[in-house]
Amino acid sequence: MSYVISGIFFLIMVGLMSLIWTSSRGAPWVPTHRDIVDRMLRMAAVRPGELVYDLGCGDGRVLVAAARHFGARAVGVELDLGRYLWSVLTITLLGLWGRVRLIRADLFDVDLSSADVVFAYLLQDTNDRLKDKLRNELRPGARIVSNTFHFSGLPLARMDDELRLYLYRIGE
Image (tube, rainbow, N blue to C red; front, side, top):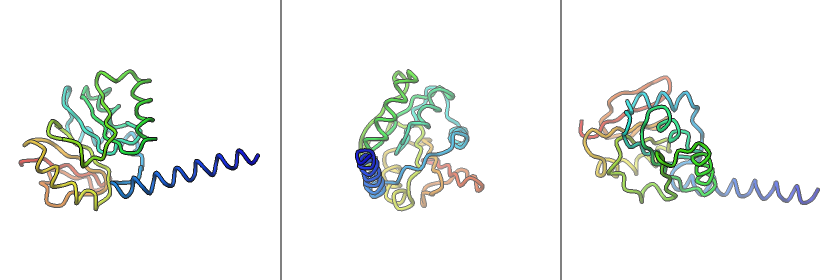
């Protein structure tokens, strides 16, 4: 019985440490409901063959939906090892390695210049730090969809007040 309690305690501590560490680097993981993911992809008007980046991809649900339902190629950026490995497992089980790529890295260290669409469900202070990177790296016409938190200073193209989704277009 003590092994079980020790194991549970260990998992809780690892989970809390992961949450604190990733929160300080971008955002804690809060999964987006699959219906909202679909709405975000439609809001961005993702087309077959486009390249979609999900910054802080968590369990990979945006990547899976972009590849399977919209015919896009997708790149997930995830810093947390546990969620990265979960995404690797998901992409492997679904046979999506031809359309999806995963990068285990800090989102501020990844080149986004090839992205057609960037998804972000981060904290407000992370968005505030990220906006200049997006403005400098993305080409005109690239779209950014943000869940809950906005990018002040970027050109807002559309918003969904009910769901707090924001669409931005670079160069417009």
